[in-house]
Image 1 (cartoon, one colour):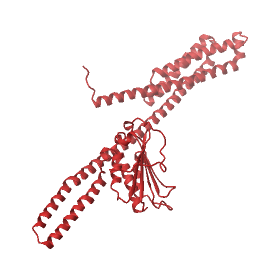
Image 2 (spheres, helix red, strand yellow):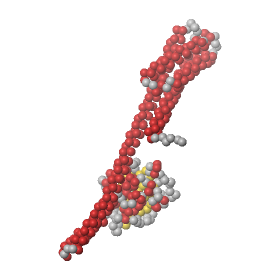
Image 3 (spheres, rainbow, N blue to C red):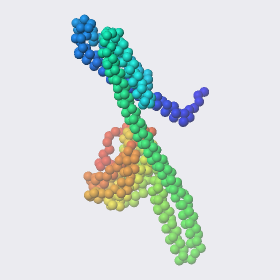
Image 4 (cartoon, one colour):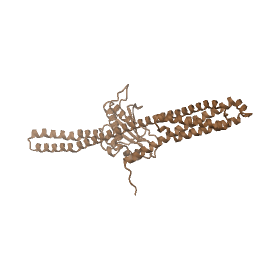
Length: 412
């Protein structure tokens, strides 16, 4: 029987695994840099020594060419480079304090220099009487190895700093995203709560008041009865229109059913003299299966764009016909609103659309406003889907011909 892992334990395990991966990555970087630099210096030292001291070596060892000297020096330097690389791999210098790093680097440099000098004496690179020549060579090697280690550790520290900064940026972005999502969920909760209160208890109060007024009217004289009936009719109109509009403004009708039903309900509220068309590109979305998978906050944002576009078209553009296109690509949902109003003439101020554009940007979406070739305005808003909102791409992949294809009329 397995014991379930708590969230805190899972987080601790994940942090421990991440720390081990970071340490392994830092050690690997240090080892690679140390190995490359040490090997480069070893090869350079070997070639330089043979080319410069080749004749002297031939006089000392009675050799006709520097090839034997080259092999001898190369073997000694290869052993030294191997020791340096092994020390870099085993000492775990990136995880130690700066003072310890310097001390261990100097100790490794000194040790490698002594080993190399001993191998040179044993191999005959220097004769026993040439200790005065071997000592400066060993000192140079100790300094160079120490510098190699410090260079590698400096680069590794830069890698660590870049990694920390990148994670801090991701952490801050995650905090901002979580805070925004929390605020949006709270906004949706409050909107739904107030809308339900208006639709339920407040409307019920209006119904009770209207019934009470009707009862009073029946017991009153004719002149007073007419006035009471007029007040009662105004209350009924207020309940049916104003309260319903206020409730829809807070939380649009059928928003929980999906983007398309909410857009359909919104268009159905327009006056009968305004021609409306609604076209959905995705066949699967036409029955709301896909569009219902979009996050509610994103649905609300897109419906608000449609509402604002409708308001502008009727109030400022004197439009008599509007068309709404809703289509989904593989990783995004886009709406396009067309009207036949007066269009855009000169610079414009977005006002409400500007606020909606800023909110879309928080979701990595965009909003544009353009003039239509046939007159009127085109408002386009697109928003990407979250990974958990992605659904299979629709079978129909042909682009939507927004201005030429016929559109089905919007129905409630």
